[in-house]
Image 1 (spheres, rainbow, N blue to C red):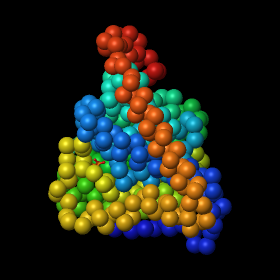
Image 2: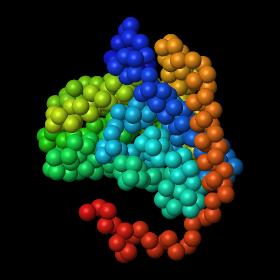
Image 3: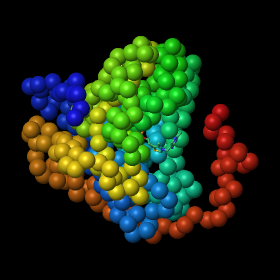
Image 4: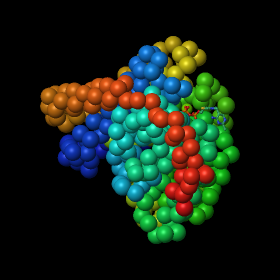
Length: 342
Ligand SMILES: Cc1ncc(C[n+]2csc(CCOP(=O)(O)OP(=O)(O)O)c2C)c(N)n1
Ligand SMILES: [Mg+2]
């Protein structure tokens, strides 16, 4: 289990440094990610999701905790496991499910699918299927902010396996030397595609134990506790906005499903999933709210509202048409669709 370095301060109530409104937002966000991804899986079983998809069921506290600490203008970069990070920045469920179903109402009008979710409007700067590819790109975006004197921060999410790719080390060195406003977030779910990270890595904590090589603090947190994640995010963002450079945060977590929709995850030892489910981020957070005196009804109302939102989105996607053929020639280099890069 995770080495938990950053527990919620003891003895504080609901209106502590996080506060009731933010806690309710953190809860709603996590439930939304869970319900939307579970629905994506159901739709896949009905053969309505095209192409592959990678779920982050069980990892919701990381996406929710970071997104709730971000402000407009901050930029997120994620991997092929990017539904949660996209939704957490406020992209509507209908847009994400529509994209997975390759409908005209999808975020990219059905042209991208699960692994290419992008929304400039929400600061979601793309999902990247090549391991490590987006770390140098996040540095580039952070460099732009630094050059222009903007306060926005780039946040780059990646897995434990990514830490053994050269681009991880190049990006960290570059970000540290230039003191870039970028926050690197390693979601350590213990597995790469099918291989346990511990079998192929010389150190226990694949990201944090390498931080000192780049002059950075070693940070390992409980990635299943949204309060812990939110506090770590706020601290790293404050450092970046103050011009004090990057942070590398390793979040210990576990994915409940296999690597991709085709993977039943039989390679995991018996009982491991059950042990982690005892520390399900949504279960932890529901208990946290109750401890702080939030009424059961308030929690149940949030659950019901989110379920309704996901049901409505599902119906809208089922009713949506396929995209027209002529969009094949739009948003491509030749029609000037590349202009947003300038
Ligand atoms: C450069 C590169 N090599 C290999 C792959 C194939 N691949 C896809 S996902 C994956 C595992 C990544 O594991 P991790 O970084 O821990 O992320 P997780 O899937 O656990 O979120 C691999 C090897 C790839 N996409 N890109
Ligand atoms: Mg992993």
